[in-house]
Image (cartoon, rainbow, N blue to C red; front, side, top):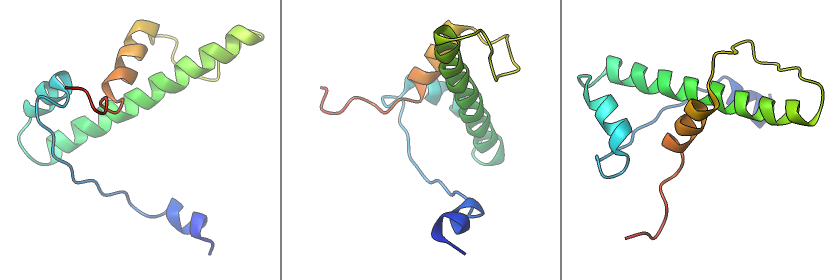
Length: 97
């Protein structure tokens, strides 16, 4: 089994700390849930929706270059919402302060 094939089946484990200063909107959303499964599932949901929005935005850019064919089946994603979701998951600026 190659290294890449092994990585496909390997679970991803995350342990991180976040303060409100890091990302106030995300922090406020996650803090609503008690520690544990509900909070983790909310973060998982937000990450999944962010990926969908990001792929949708990329598909729209490709569609603008050629025939209007989008591989995404969800036409209800608003570009402004997708941009905002992408901003939420961007890395914080380094060296500001």
